[in-house]
Amino acid sequence: EVQLVESGGGLVKPGGSLRLSCVASGFTFSSYSLNWVRQAPGKGLEWVSFISTSSSNIYYADSLKGRFTISRDNAKNSLFLQMNSLKVDDTAVYYCASGTYLGYWGQGTLVTVSS
Amino acid sequence: DIQMTQSPSSLSASVGDRVTITCRASRGIDNYLAWFQQKPGKAPKSLIYAASSLQSGVPSKFSGSGSGTDFTLTISSLQPEDFATYYCQQYNSFPYTFGQGTKLEIK
Image (cartoon, rainbow over all chains, first blue to last red; front, side):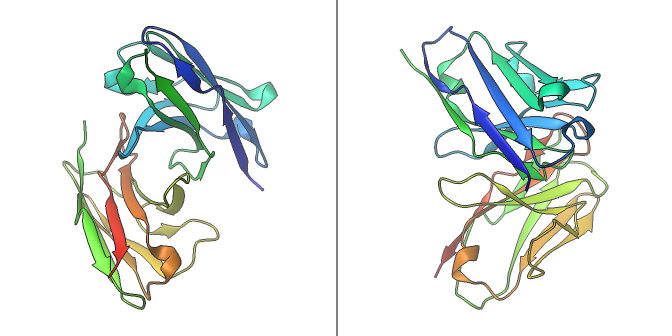
């Protein structure tokens, strides 16, 4: 069974940092590209970032303006999102999702940015 | 960026009905279109990829069609568990973009 489990969310002050993790199981992790997608409270889905199987191709949403960094560790079946200079507008549930067409999703981790 | 526009934004239907949701891309995306279902408080679930291919384990009551700029998701014989919010998403080019969602409610 495919499983993606996110962690690392929490309450952080504006300007602070957080590192999200996503641990995968049930599939050949190194063979799949990965994504982060977020959803602000009561809002729709917003794609955040993509990383290819070997980390050679990485893309971000324009709105992030260099504040977020995606990475992966294929030896540990893990995906990461380093989030710096957090803003109130970054408050959302953050999901990791596998593959080019986001075939499997984790349950999400809530990030709250508030003073 | 490619803009994805879904219609309608909300839809009321009865159990047993057949409904269609439309998704339009601001420019051609070939068939690089996926559909997702999301229930309150839950993660999205993949239904369809490549515009018309059913994700493993998804019942055949869900079907997708289209290519280029215009796409549809059809759900036949609605059951109570089908009432949810549905999103389309293009993965033709970065940044990936989602439609704004269609909330399917029980009439």
